[in-house]
Image (cartoon, rainbow, N blue to C red; front, side, top):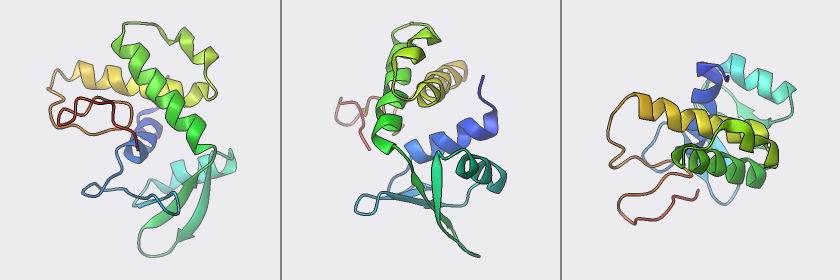
Length: 134
């Protein structure tokens, strides 16, 4: 099980968009926002992210092996939605990202709130009917 703070950090990256707390720049592939420094430091140390800039404003980071993370996160969401178990994580390039997506889907399902209008990588976009890709 992934801690709430860690899951929230990575989910905030997957939710990044124009009108969200975390911004994603398609040209530089950098994420910027106000993150939990303890989580950021831990995942820099583990090599999952790189620090680009941290000053009194927003922290700017890069997600290492971003393509693997995105595809595995989306696979976790998809398998959770299909009712599969988490054992599928073993078949992904990034089992951690699969687990984050899998657990995120289940956390949202527990809240029993409608996902209408919710935009997150790997989730269906109601406006288009397509799976949102970052």
